[in-house]
Length: 171
Image (cartoon, rainbow, N blue to C red; front, side, top):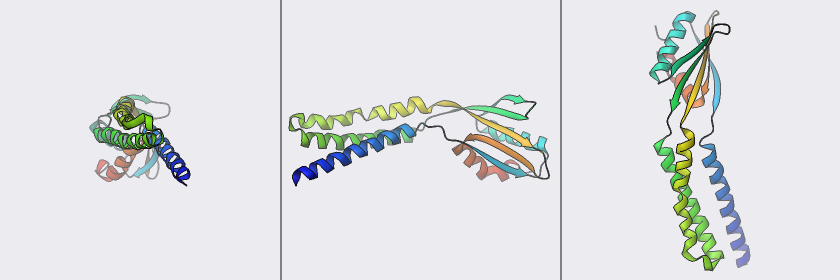
């Protein structure tokens, strides 16, 4: 009976560590999406309003493709201190759990198993090094009955744009 309990505890701890590994890895993944928004302003006014908004969010206009009418903006995305600390804390808890299980299953490991938690800051360091990057926002204004803005970029940036769009294009 005790063997079944220790085996299942080890299995669950290993699964926890796998989930934690993939969670830390996913923290740096780019999440690019595209949205379409409509406004009644002229395409020129709409483009200028969007350019002002993006420049206010620390993006710079890099190129405008005259053929397609698509503008490319670039901006540096800084990593989140909160997320780096959170990932380190979660890694410390996960590694301490793995250390406790290892100490129990292999008694000669002793208290050194819990020392695995000392590797936890590596999770925050990994996030900090990989999350800092230059991101692009692609913008295209299409004329029509209701002028349409197509924006492609990071989903968090697009969510903020969608939330503030009415104020951005307000006359």
